[in-house]
Length: 262
Ligand SMILES: [Zn+2]
Image (cartoon, rainbow, N blue to C red; front, side, top):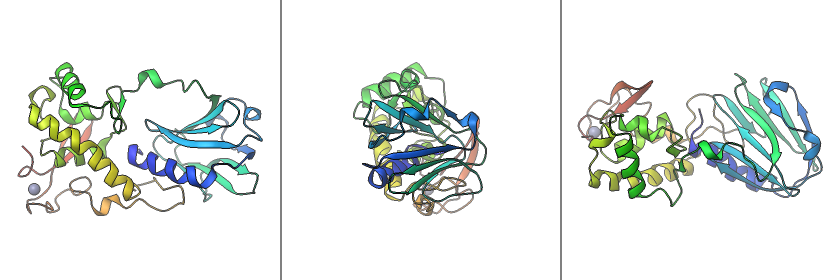
């Protein structure tokens, strides 16, 4: 599933590519993935494309917005695909394709003041509101939960999933299965700086293409080439040369270096 860097990459690219264009048509090939009335946005111009958590918010010039969640296998690109489900055509005849193999993703036309899900999302992982104080409070509240699972809980911090929780914990030198309540203040400070560092680096590389994720121009993300632990089972740690270990944490597999992380 795309995480914050992948969705942010798509939003930054689309903001450049479609800002100012008017929507001429929306062709819906998979009805269950589209809700709202497309008449509310036809002939409206795109004001901006911004990320809300892991969702893409296309703001229009008439107080409506198009909210998109890519879920497991969704793509929003300028390239069509055998699994294209929804097609946007703009006034210059350029097109944007919503492709989705597994059909869990969705597109909603909504009034721009209601994103509908804001209340259930925690503080954005790139927000300045994500302070060491906030992390301390959250870790005390979830003190018996593995730190990796806490970082991935979207109701606490939004945007971090399986890939970047591994990478952030490697950066902070913390083992993924340690209980959140046992993370000390120095480690929390380190974690606080690793979260934006890792995510911004991933955005620079266009995110991680492990399977279906593609950038808005259809290219794969390049972060996997520089990932420290994720996807590197049994490879050598880039810092110390030890083998990267893996272990189940909650429902997911954590990757880590037992020498570099404590
Ligand atoms: Zn190591």
